Image (cartoon, helix red, strand yellow):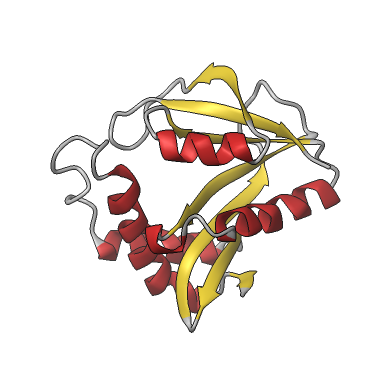
Length: 165
């Protein structure tokens, strides 16, 4: 089931995010950087995001959160108001490859299109070939923009873009 995140999901989202980060970035992030991330800190971040009523969807299977997506207006100055942004899309590795990530993505992009967005952007680690492959298969393409500031672990990001239906 895909549903809006609730304030009561903060603990589960914190654990899910740490788990997904280790699965996705374990071989990419500099040694020790992921271990420095704590569950308490992630829960604090999620509590704040949920209190601000940010657009966050969760994928719930058998009562457990296995994925999430966050979306909203694009934050980049070089795109117009008609562009939305997929801020984050994570799915546990055990749930990947069966279409759940695509469903979660589509559910996050639909409100952007319904709100008048004609395009969307998403940032990801340049070295994350699995994510880049997922986005490319879903109709996104690299728009030649490399992040002006590195992500949390000092790793460069690249921007992808797609047209919304």
